[in-house]
Length: 288
Length: 338
Ligand SMILES: Nc1ncnc2c1ncn2[C@@H]1O[C@H](COP(=O)(O)OP(=O)(O)O)[C@@H](O)[C@H]1O
Ligand SMILES: [Mg+2]
Image (cartoon, rainbow over all chains, first blue to last red; front, side, top):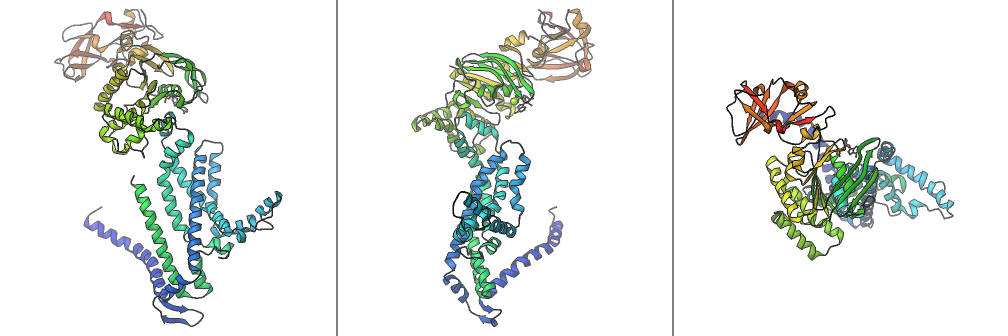
């Protein structure tokens, strides 16, 4: 396979795919970069020429910028914490031999197949609606005042919705990892006098560390870009405006493509900082 | 201390009874080997003693106290697993320290015992490595070290050498035997390899399908096997078991003669056959003799063992004479006669 000839043949064969993918990635990236240095208002005069770093300065100095960064990080952090803690617990639970295991596993995985827009709408209207939602009924049943979730507890609500969507993913990865744990190790620990909690802490958790890092990495990448859940529920109000959402507003609501593009570049930088940070951890964890 | 007593112990998995009612006493300080073919319930029996499996009925006594419902950690037994079951993310030191850490033994004492075990097991240079960075034999020693530091009343080994290559196996066999002599602690050792059983045991328990076929010292089993199964299982090469006419001459359904108890001649003898494969080990030679006309299984083959060497080529005629005083006789049920 590795002769000179077969290698160059392989290159030619792969070229269309590589070029397509490269174009797919590079064109939008370059366009974004280009626009970010322009004053470009499609409805109010169109392309108004180069403005240097004006857009970048304006984007950062806008009062909405830092709150949006913190909203992004809170959502990402909150969802990661919840999905990993509950993912580990669910994985342990699902790994126990029990009746109807197959069905339960499918049920647990089901939320992953629901589109974000749909699931957010379901949560918003069926659970969190302050007059007709299930939560409202539950609160009333116990004689409490129903909460209007999406305005009074907007952040926790969104974290909850997104966690619900991502919990199956975390559970699935962690379940496969837990299934590969050698049961003799647990038995050895049991004989060594470790009670269940310590067996979990000293044997199971370290065994899962690799899978946890992978979940952390993959989820972070996707969570940095959540949009539909916010669009459908709060529309960015009540402190739920993430960086992605802010960019969307700048481009589509304020019709300021230049400013939005500068925000996009910031988002790329943020994502890369997080990615490098995570890669470090993963790298350390993966070669152990 | 470390006497273990099983009283009418049974174990079933669902409807399948793996261990039928079984009585066994293992004396304090004894090296007991459970030996038998794969799947005969050796591991299950060991795990019942360890407490890793619940017994279906019966009682287990350890040091004279009923331990039937005592959890594994409280039985004072240490186990060495076939897969070693080392904790992969902990250093060798931490692995060995783990049981002491769980027992809340103070740091200084922990270190003293770790150093002691490491020295005894040649692990001093490896204490800071991870199990993944060790060879099979070293991992085995770490697993033993982890068991030693607990100062248990008995050690349980489940086929501890089966993942090692032949040369290492012989070495580790000696080390474990020496360890037993030094510690004089009860050890129960499970293996399917009768050579390990013969070389290491004070007492061998031969199991078949959960039944105890015979209990005895290695030489008792060698000289006086209680039945055909034990006779065929103990000893290497295997005893020749001959049925039919030849056996009837001796008033038995089956006669058994060990390869080393057969005299070989090129000129005359009781049985005649042709030489098949001859395995020359230098010190002795195993000759597989075919077409003996004896009813001894496929090809009427009989194995003989002679000290030193013999000029025997494939296809040569050869004469065998069993030493009649070393002949084993079995009845139709396979039980020993006389
Ligand atoms: N957890 C279990 N569930 C069902 N059957 C088992 C289980 N463990 C062992 N067995 C059965 O019990 C028998 C004895 O197994 P084992 O004690 O492992 O044999 P050995 O160690 O002598 O090779 C085997 O037939 C095996 O299939
Ligand atoms: Mg076994």
